[in-house]
Amino acid sequence: MSVISGSEIIANSLVQLGVTHIFGIVGIPVIEVAEACINRGIKFISFRNEQAATYAATAYGYLTGKPGVSLVVGGPGVVHAMAGIENANSNHFPLLLLAGSSETHQRGKGAFQELNQVALLYPHTKFANQPSTVKSVPYMIEKAYRTSYFGRPGSTYIDLPADIIQAKLDIKNHQSKESVVQKLVPPGLAPKTMGDPERIRRAVNVLKTAKSPLLIVGKGAAYGRAENIIRQFQERTNIPFLPTPMGKGVIPDDNSLNVSAARSAALKNADVILLLGARLNWILHYGDSPKFSDNVKIIQVDSAAEELGNNSGNPELGIAGDIELVVHQILNELTSHGNSSWRSPPLLKEIADTKASNQAKAEKVDSTVTDPIKYQAVYKTIRETFSETLPSSKEIIYVSEGANTMDISRSSFSLNSPRTRLDAGTNATMGVGLGYAIAAKAASPDSLVVAIEGDSAFGFSAVEVETAVRSQLPMIIYVMNNSGVYHGVDPTAYDNVDDKPLPSTALQLNTAYHTLAESLGAKGYLAKTLDEVRSATLEAIRSDNVSVINVIIDSGKDKKLEFGWMASTKPKL
Image (tube, rainbow, N blue to C red; front, side, top):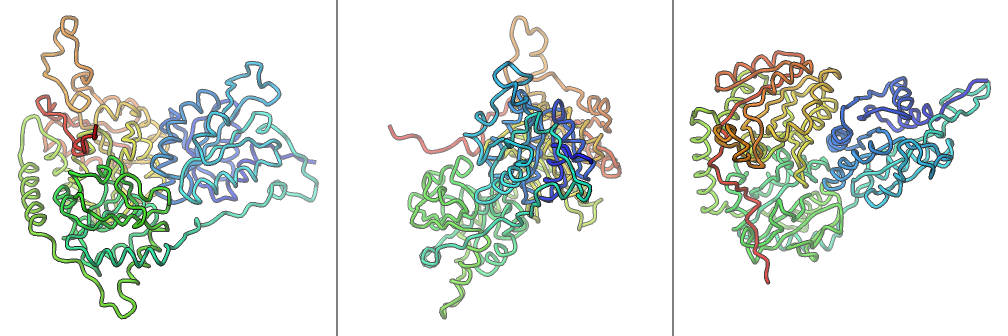
């Protein structure tokens, strides 16, 4: 009579659910789980830090629409992984975290890495539990997997004690190992709900009154795979639109009614806003004046009803439902009952003029060559090199993190496909970059993955370059090196730090990240001129390895620290 182990039951459960990738770090007691998963054909990508592993899993969940799975050790491994849990929750990405824990009969004795992980994570997850027997493992894993992406996506957790992992079940002669495990059926696509018909009619009536309407497209629309109907709606109505950073590409950026270049003017002048899959948080200035008109009417569409009415939202105009289905309903209502198809009034002259002026200014800045080189000229060089070298059908997935690096790159790279930009997200989380890039390549192996990293942000997860190399996941990583957080300092500031300490934002001057990359098995390039950026980019495109291009740019030491989201309504005292 043969036996099946708890680790094999865990692996079989994940295989039955359709899991193909796991991101994690092994140790006692989860090595057996990872090996069992590998033996069943699951690709296990082993990271160097649990934060990066769980960040990767969250991004994988966003890109695929199914839960990203992470496996870590207990105790400190779970504590580190909490960063990924928060990232999943704040961005509403589906994540299933599996972690080992001490043997149940040793609890309370100071066992190895003992921590009450279920109690710790219960308040921060949609579901957290520990199977009481090895036979209950499949049920628990299926429930956690399903819960993470049914309803509002978020994180779930299953605790795997060492005695559960190492348990053995007898297999009778006529049984296979697979038949011993409870048969699991993959949950399939998450259920979708339509919007309340009365609220749809109310929204359409409000939309028809608009003199300066605006469509705002958020990352929720991208996650919801709503791009086809949203594009159809925009084309039929001719409505101007503004994508949020990760909503870019749901409607192609090169659409003439994209008002990103006149963002402030578009928000201020909009009298009716249709908000699809975006929250009225700091990214959208809470919907408050002076960024928004005092009299704006916001029609908010979100799969989570609790978002409706937040901040400056009007709960009576909110529509709870799947974005794709609700936009279908709105479009049908606009064209049914004998109504002629409503079309947006022409773009206001103020917005059109502001857009043209800002685009002209941006083109001038992009074309200005300085020494040291600056972000905009570097990004233009990268764009042009890709355009000249890659086939037009080649999909590029951009990952960007950092302050100026991310902020400037948002408008510098035009996207025509959804889910092709990953950034620091709702919580502006630094350290996600390498994990996100690895997840993007794992989820879309035929795409070119390009990570554009601030030097400070790169430092959070730089050693994961080795993970990408070892996992044979080629990508191009640009490190925008201004030797500082936000900005660098004058080189003379390093001369005598005992007398005058460096400011808290300073980093080591011109750190050799390309040399670090080479020590980790990647190709490393140093670029101080635009020609060197172009040359390194061409070599990186031709390479089948990870390439890290260390771009020395202007320190920006005299630049005022300022971002658009920092200007918001003063509190009323």
